[in-house]
Image (cartoon, rainbow, N blue to C red; front, side, top):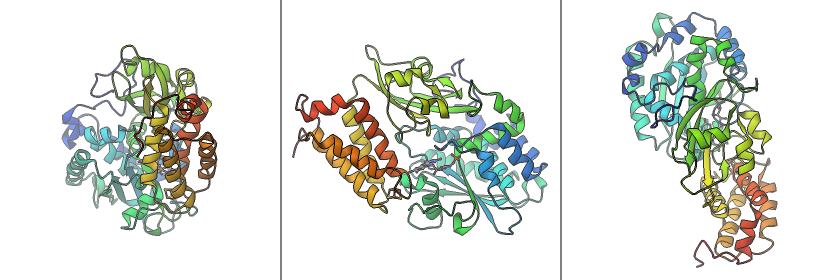
Length: 435
Ligand SMILES: Cc1cc2nc3c(=O)[nH]c(=O)nc-3n(C[C@H](O)[C@H](O)[C@H](O)COP(=O)(O)O)c2cc1C
Ligand code: SF4
């Protein structure tokens, strides 16, 4: 539900049912609400049966790429005799995205239960839950919940008397966006600098400490207990028209809306209704201008695209962008697109790990060029230069941070070119002071 707002009747509340309910944070409170039944059920199933159930549900990764979760789990080797690991990605540093934080704040046991089921399904005895460094409150709540789960036998050497060992280690990040990328996270867990690794090998072959590893997002893992409790068919039926995008999704809506918050709806929900109805629409006297729907790492949508899009993996691609982490950055007609994309470029330049030339130089030069445009010192050829840089930054680097920087710039120039031209032609006063 759109915590702190009351749940909207148009939401389909599954993961967020207990947001705002302090009692649900405790082990006793969670079990009173049906918690840990799914883990007990899972322990009576074969790992293969769990993987099949998750595959049948159609669950896709909620961390950004939308990769099918059951399929990812099935890549883990079987009978190899090696230790396996599960990594829970709780780094959530994507601009505009604040859903995993709320899951950990309100329902830590929902996540722990999902992690334990996933670990059992992929043959892992150890889970690393990598929590964003700045998440002080979620860290404290998760720490307490993990202690409670050990004390109640939901984690440890003999989970609920099954003879299975499942340990969960909380690992706190140090505030680097790049550590949300799966292989950078693995390096960071190993105590190394958080630089992304070249793939292949993929994590299922060589992940944490070179051993088979599966990595999933907080929201992905939190959906798993519900799938086991209520069945794959129930989850699959949570679908509006598009059978490739099933289940509910938390949409973090922020920016120029009256009621920013997390809204949980069935995938395929109209974006127009999410923004104008659930999130309360624009401020008085303002009109919707643009939306960046996947956190900041995807193309900007203009008003026509946004208001005709359906919120699922394919629906948003059809309208020229991507679902990503489903953090909606909503901009009304007061927004300066040039300034907005400059802020994003500056963010990516700061967060680049600097291993790849195209990313290190590309993000830095993109920032510098946008800065000079905003200072009223832009040149007519600057837009072509920015587009050329973006081509060099896309599809050529170890990870997609570089592509992520290029996406809003290219779409910004293509869809709002007149705003860039206004600065370059000096028709608009500089937004930044020249030094
Ligand atoms: C630069 C960068 C940052 C990322 N940050 C996050 C993040 O904060 N949280 C997350 O779940 N996934 C993040 N991802 C995606 C992960 O690499 C990975 O795909 C995801 O954790 C897989 O989980 P899923 O299959 O459940 O979505 C990021 C990717 C990149 C390239
Ligand atoms: S693309 Fe950027 S962040 Fe990713 S590995 Fe290369 S330099 Fe590092």
